[in-house]
Image (cartoon, rainbow, N blue to C red; front, side, top):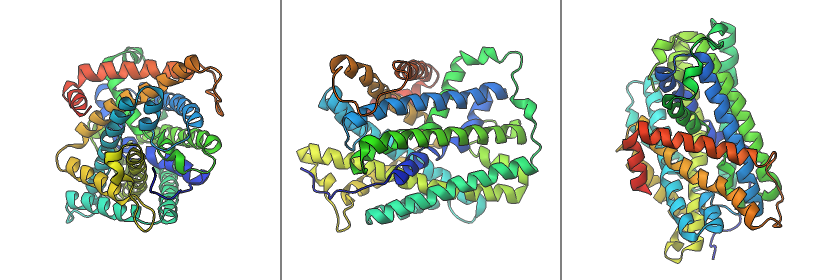
Length: 418
């Protein structure tokens, strides 16, 4: 039985949640890891296109499932209903650690890294921990405060990204020929390094299902959830394509290769030292919205688990403002533990492998339910069915096989978590 009062999220806030869930660390860091193995502009741009299309396919599938079964909880709720409660329970803890705690830790570490670049006297780790504590405090407040905080910082983040893009096109060198196809590009597309690079891209797109985790808190979820998922994913795909094009045509590739702070390097090359500082500030501000939405979504999953499992009832216990304060504290504790024990790159690969498994099972539920319950009401149906679930499952399996072969240590830690 639920202890928490109903909380109502608007379509605008749900779309902001999807955008903020995705635009976090990945787009500002992934390119440096990709350039090491794929030193060619066209295959890299295709990576970001493929990632956007695959994410949109996933969004279509999740929209059909949640429109049929509108409730918060994400994979925990969906896998419990479609397969077995134990599958949902495992997915709930996987999403808690790999879907929320680890990405929050990665985002906080990146925030600390960029903040240290701006103010070298400040400790990276202390800045990261401080951000987690501040955003956690906001999440303890009333929903109106959380919603307003989320929308404001998401709009600020998107606005600043557009300012950077237009500034780069105005002041940058814009070597467009670097994005053109060239001889030898075809060898990259079916290689294992390309599949692993797609893992980095899919990490950047992770969050296309962000609104699913709080579906039960939305106004008219059967209508608004599919719209939020699709609008948010398309907005982010356009942003990512344009932003990576700006990096590739304006910044020296050798300076970005295998660098975590690729956006900072690119901004310095385009605008000079002050431009690099401005990019660092842009990313730091943007990460605030990213952390906020991940904490809210993660605690929504915990809250639903607390409603279903008697021994975990305390996870659904609200404070005076209606926030599930014990879930917030549990998530914060996991985040701090991961921040003190892992590097950013290890976290990134560990996260995406586990998330792919959970997402793959959810996507497979669409054709399974179409076969099991062909006459069940479907307020939203996947367009061009069965193409979207097939595309997602084929690409996800390809990435998982490549990840296990290329990164066995991170894959093994994922298996241990499960």
